[in-house]
Image 1 (cartoon, chains in turn cyan, blue):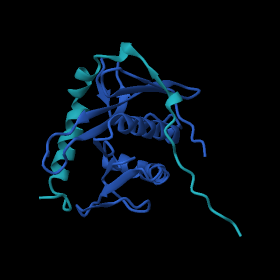
Image 2 (cartoon, each protein chain N blue to C red):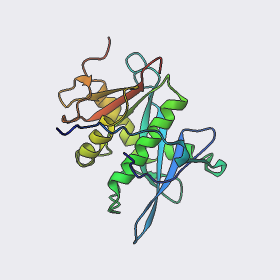
Image 3 (cartoon, each protein chain N blue to C red):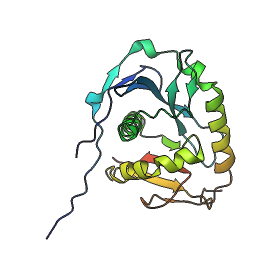
Image 4 (tube, each protein chain N blue to C red):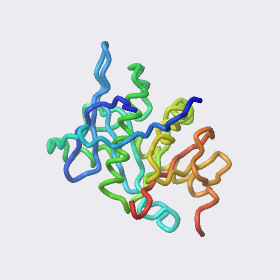
Length: 54
Length: 154
């Protein structure tokens, strides 16, 4: 009989490298038109979702 | 089971992660960052929105470009790695994310669902349905957004 084993996707910290040169990019990115649009769309639709506590 | 992911570089003080999508034809710098979604603090407290896209030379982000680099599964697995890392560092937060467009959400759905379904049980995964309901995530359902958090005590 075949036994199915659920494979888990684990966090592998070895994939990550700290790079101080990346600091400071956030401020520019957050004002990208695409990001503003995504944020507004998410706000608009989540405000209608049932199941959130009132 | 090992799922291939790209090497990830991150900023020390910000929730900012970069990696390169690599094919024989091109290399595309991708960025994932987490920004406080404080529009609805009463119902979504301590929630961060995952933003993912191509990093442009001026540090703006293009979330709708179709890279066509034939590595969507590896890219999405890498994005999920950043999500797990973010929640490990900040277990008190939740993360909400969706596709940048409806067609992209549909395109990503199967892969994202498979990846989320293979997370261990230390995560709470919820889906926001197109009927505007929030429910526990089911791999075979369509959602317009996902909400993920760590279970307390893990």
